[in-house]
Image: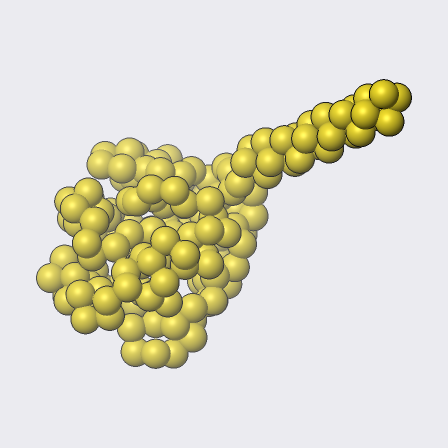
Length: 175
């Protein structure tokens, strides 16, 4: 009987530890104030590009996909913000660009959406793994569109900016 109680107590403690670990892992994620983890993926033309190459600029890390209707509806807003702020001087960053991470599985659809939506910036990456894209998992992306605005030091200053909230946040960051 005593061994059964000890095993039960041990099982309860193990479950509590595992639950605590899971809750803490979910809470951590990537949050405002955190340093953005580097992203290194293949671009539209097959070369490897890295988020760290953009150090010193304000960057919107934008998670999207060609098949995502809300993403496609949001793209004109993102394009407008890019055009309005790409040459601005910010409190902590010179210029603004976008680092688009696609959750597409179809290369042709991805490239066509970039063209159709006039996504003029140079930083488009995709590994064609859909929701299993390592970068999306690393950033805790559970829905798209999703984005993270980082300053010139790579610190996340805002996230999930949609509609007019993106330009409002960028205007607050201007020097």
